[in-house]
Length: 381
Image 1 (spheres, one colour):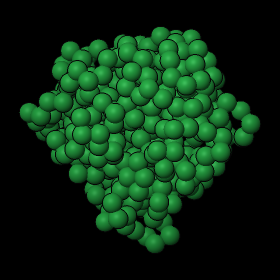
Image 2 (cartoon, rainbow, N blue to C red; image 1 turned 135 degrees about the vertical axis):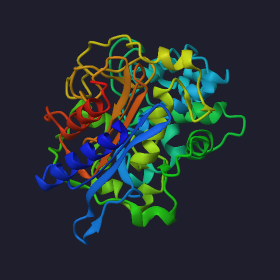
Image 3 (cartoon, helix red, strand yellow; image 1 turned 120 degrees about the vertical axis):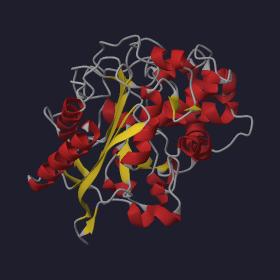
């Protein structure tokens, strides 16, 4: 009974948000244990053509991708192929350049590595060239000593972990293929893409960034995410960018597939009998990182609630308030996409949309409202 109530309540909420102009197109999917309890969508995937959102519509989720990328690294640790406290250079010797020999895998996961700067000469085309990106990141000195302070790796996070995973994979698969074969396929996530195939292009929603205030150039935020590769429709709607593996910010998912990854986490590393991680390991992810209370110079000077394992933690601390439980694992994406896993309740929620908003300024946003509706109707408030 509560499953039907939750689905109906979320559907009504989404319809109202679109009618009020707060959303354009949106999907929400939620799991409680192994059961899918919410699967809703509404609005327009492309207002210019009138194409409507359906359950198969795909959305740019930006930094929600980081949760999947972190999960890939944890799978390698589960297999004994990565030691969190080992230097990155153990797996990637070229990375030791520029005084980075003391940076560990844990530093990277915790966003305290100091290796936050993108190559200043990066272009959208070069961003799509994996070998160029990892070579330039290896050559670039860190901005801060490893472990010394919070320094959000807006874009470098993906290539840092992705290259470690690629080099520790006995098959040395490209990172996007690793994610498909080791995470998406086992979990039945048919639309979890780090680099889309041509066949799904028509299903990708058109982004609306009218509510976003673009950060100015000439600051540390822009060193981490240069304006020419900003997390905006251009360049991220360019066909060749959509087809590239950009593992920190390039994910194109739908809510159904995203929710299954977070459901695996919410259930302690297993979903429908498929185990990717041990329960003990997943439970450990909910611990804060060092420098948890630092104001982060990259993330607009905010305190970013990141755990040591690469996921954000829930609770009431902004900018993410949807997963109320501080033991929840989550990750937001530029413009308001979000996925979260409440480890205590076994509840996982994915929120995908195309009306990007300023996630720093929003207080009571759609994600928080939907999360509260789900908890209340399932009796989990």
